[in-house]
Amino acid sequence: MPDLKENFVINTITQLSCFLVFSIAMNQLSLLHVLVMTSLLVVALIAIKAGQFLRMLKRMKWFFLVMLLIFTFNTPGQHIQGWDYFLSPTYEGLASGLLQVFRMLALLAALSLIMAINTKQQLISGFCFMLLPLQFLGFEIQRFAARLWLTLEYVEAAQYSDQQKFKQHQGLLNQLKAFGHVHDTQPADSSITFTMPVFKVLDMVVIAGLMVISCYVLVKALA
Image (cartoon, rainbow, N blue to C red; front, side):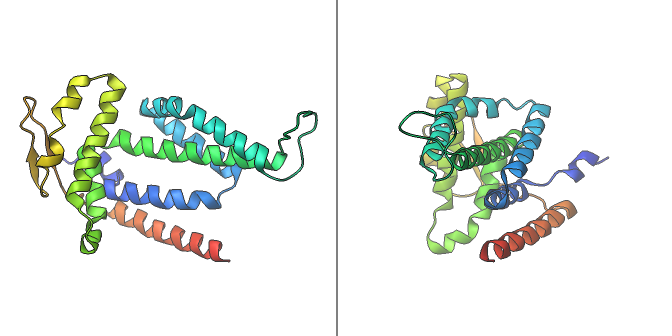
């Protein structure tokens, strides 16, 4: 008997398409809308117990602070009262800085959610099949897949201080030559299987919705 839960889950390509449209649409959202979207994504991450988002926040905390300070002190507008120093922050700069920070938080949360509910092979397969049209322009999909695999392996190994895992996959870049099954000759066997995700009715509905949203964002941006 088929699992009913699978009928309500979109495939990796659809998820990546949602992330792409979401990234573009974020520029049209206000601070309140961005806060709501970020809160919903964080709740979803907490529900699935994805701790990767917190680790990413910990690594990027100084980046967020510097970005907030740059916008706060370099955006023209009404100066914040009670600030007696030479460099005066503005209310408009503070609002712009918070907007950019929460936009980044929303994108990180969305990316963490995709990475939490997909395996590395699913992510690589999704990226590769989305980039297949670029082969006609000379883009090497196989090399991209190998580098993406190694990047994900390095990130995972760095998070868990698994030095042995670094050595295990160093030869994978040279061994990934074509789509299909690629086996590592290291003691611990590893493989990449490129499988075209199955598009269900829900995927078609979501993609149709993404096309409508994309057209709306384009028209709003050109208006």
